[in-house]
Image (tube, rainbow, N blue to C red; front, side):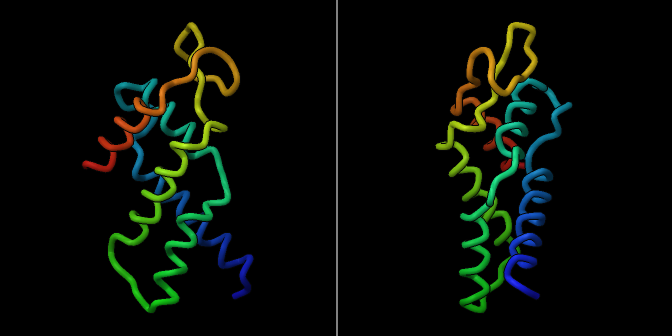
Length: 117
């Protein structure tokens, strides 16, 4: 398998796992969960989690929680990247570029709760 194919597969696996780790957008409180999903699942290179997985593979290591650890690295890095912070408009709908920014602290409360399950 060539490098590009390997990276695409890893990114896809990370995306699927992140989507499963986060609460569904329809779960209460919906505005928080929509914000979390918008912020986290908006795409990206996923370099940090890929490096985590590749470092483990290079060391000949594997662990049941390795993908979750890689996803946790991605969530921590997303918290410092303001480019995908969701916006809330007056009707409560999330928008990409309008209204007030949903606080990263609020997103972290929700992400922490998602991982606690």
